Length: 459
Image (cartoon, rainbow, N blue to C red):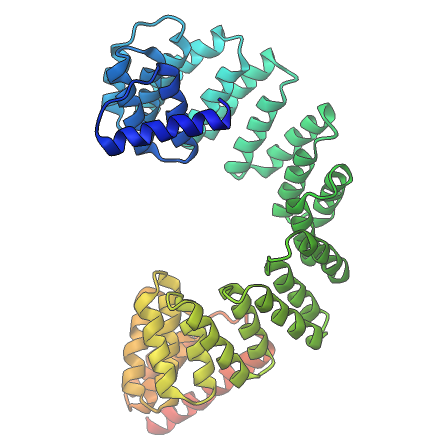
């Protein structure tokens, strides 16, 4: 329906709702209004339209089918089944059967649903049916079954790009990237000028960390459509991951030309310059990212991390405060600010920030990190009794937390609980140091040796 018509019909329909008086619409108009609300993802509004339409046009099968579709989307399977039972099967047979099968697979009656799919796949000469079957099975993560039916479809329609793309998508969603890649190669054999398929292939290679092949696929895509922003951005990311920072900068600047208000390419460029040890340029692009979007928490965090790595903690604190003026609902920002304040020996301010972080954090691992950091802070304040309380909570949540046992051993020694100190010193000695640097290992060994000697003197 043309835009001006749907606008007029919507106006009449919404005026009817406001006045509370029934106004006649033909069934096609109700269908178009329902389709509009579907496009806006307003399921409840679409259902109201269909129900009003059925009042004026009882038994209209198109509207009934729309209502069934909506009820299934809402998970109201019993209501949908009752409507299906009341429909006389004629030209809607395959659609009704698909609805029945979808209800079965969503109500743990998988085999009944598969039986219907078996019948449809044998009888159907429409590739649409195989795509619908796949969508239904994919929605309940039955990817292997979905691909089995798609393979049946490909026997009937061996050149169907839509079926092949659906096979590849199912492999991708199930994490089976090795099987998805050959399917994309089959697609590109049929349609070598499909830039989207080259990009999707490149994305799969990037997931598998085969960045050379990913970049090659992105280059093929860009040879077909050199303005595709998604492909340019992903190519830039792959160039970073492949260590080709200069080319990555060039590609991301190209992307920035298409998205002049997007700060993310400048964040990535800053990371490139950081890797290249061009710290002035890195700082410049951190600033550019914030200038592009002074509401971007991501841009502020990049600047904060950069400044912390350069031991520019006072500047980092300024940017942390700026970011917290943008949002006070980001626990990680409070966590960062607390770490900065701890480094600046502002333990009172740091503790307040840690409390704010843990108050709003919803992530268990982050909360554990915060508890550990507060324990370390209490140690710095020589308040080992309280430090132990926080370390014990960390031990409860994550007993293999790095360096936890050594920290606990130190605090137990300070509060003269020497048996506990010896217990945790033994645990610390048994901890793996595989991920630690030589300097970190040496520091640990020095503390363990010192504590061991002190305990021997006491005993």
